[in-house]
Length: 258
Image (tube, rainbow, N blue to C red; front, side, top):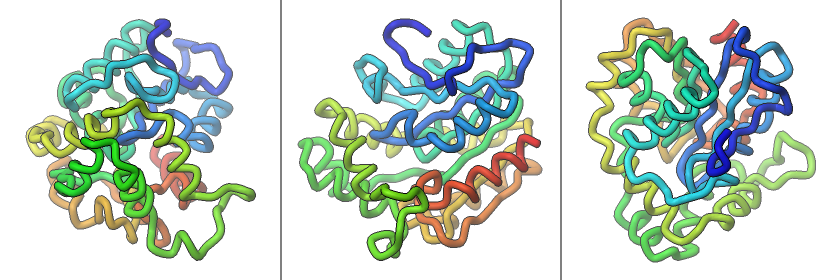
């Protein structure tokens, strides 16, 4: 990996004889959002690249301003590591990146999984404005809307962890302007249906039934546009499926890659 970019590999060297799973995080987040899922596949016979997009986590900036640019950046990472084909797994903004990547580089994608997705992925003006001004309210909006309503009253599936605090800690590490750049990229992405029509590989949607940020109905047209796609609904989860329902999300991916 170049010095400017970071990807978690589950502490394993890449082996080009193995299948590769690339995990792409959502707006304002980083590779650690995939902790359980990336570690599982890394220890069960797969190469894993859980990337930090530029200006996120351990990757240097500046932040990329469009979904297309982010998809091209992922392609450069795969080219650098000489990986010719991979499974792409994306959450929220990352799901749009995975979709656009698949449309642009179909020969480099074995399968695609989109978690907590919607198209169009419009962002409210109040949310965008708060992020534009680096207002704490933007981080609060992403945290509260990014979880099911019952989260403040229920326990974290991971003992000793606080779901709201976990998200806020990641967001607090962002440089000024990065969250707004991500949200604006999601809001302006207009190529979803055109990209979906180009997807010929197996596709999986994993949707939280209680997601208020990207409600399941907002993914229906996208799912219909991808021939043969499968949808798994996680009844107890909101938008943050990897944290709220880590085992159900992992089980869906295991079944899909099996």
